[in-house]
Image (tube, rainbow, N blue to C red; front, side, top):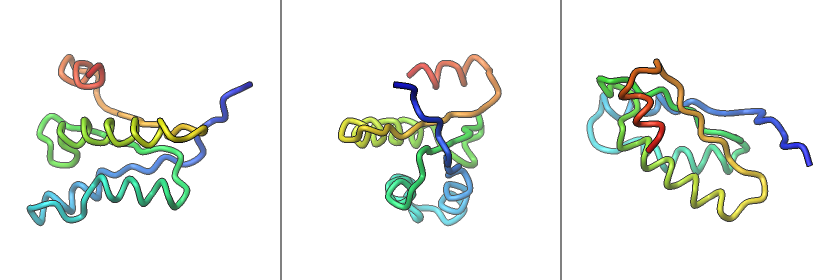
Length: 96
């Protein structure tokens, strides 16, 4: 059976920017990702930067863990899209 293409992947970078500007963990990126999936998103997109002013490396690892857990219970898998400049650090992050 042919895999269906992801129709909507939501970039959560702006949510992370708001969180980082406030300090703390509000909005909670993991909860936002879960909510977006519940509301119909078929993918979560991040664009990590070396300065971590948006998404942090820890967010990438936490989102990966969350999406693996969610995908283990679903037939239609949620896509995790990591975008960025292909530097050595970025490639190493994606490989993890």
